[in-house]
Length: 229
Image 1 (spheres, helix red, strand yellow):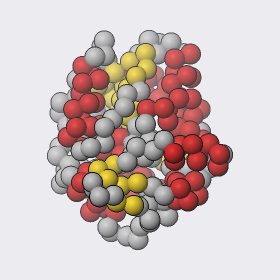
Image 2 (spheres, rainbow, N blue to C red):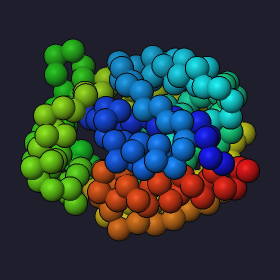
Image 3 (cartoon, one colour):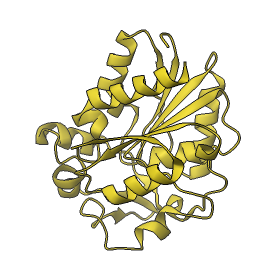
Image 4 (cartoon, one colour):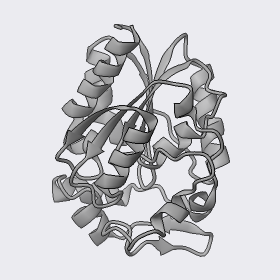
């Protein structure tokens, strides 16, 4: 599917540049790639931004989401303009009635999220040691510190947003499980992938495979595109 539209959805504590290596590789293969910025002020605002970007695509579009970006694309529900498939990269894949906060509360906090800092405006930030040592544990520490410096905080209110009818019930799905993930438990990723019937691959990666293992992410995207032909 050369020339296919691909929209990349970043997660919390990141921005569109986290996909840089993936964007470069997909562009080199002739695809039209968009890696927009999401405000992360509310789930509603993030979904509105994704719909805005999807409406700008010229034809069928594969949506790829990382971490909280999976929450954004799942919340498209039955209103996903131009979207023909969803690729989850170590991403939340919730079902109707679930929330991220409720799921995270079922066990002890993961190492990457154990010391979240909530500021006076209600935004969550990752401290540097959690980001470098756990969130991006297999990224060069100097690079991880740059990523930490550029992090975009997430409105803590998004953790309580309850999912409506998920988009994955209407669209084919693919899932990359990061087996060394210290932000989202790998077993939770496997459970979500299984529940949605996703074509699944497992990669020995931290929570940020699009940075530490971009080739694996590109390969899964190409697998999805081939299946959608």
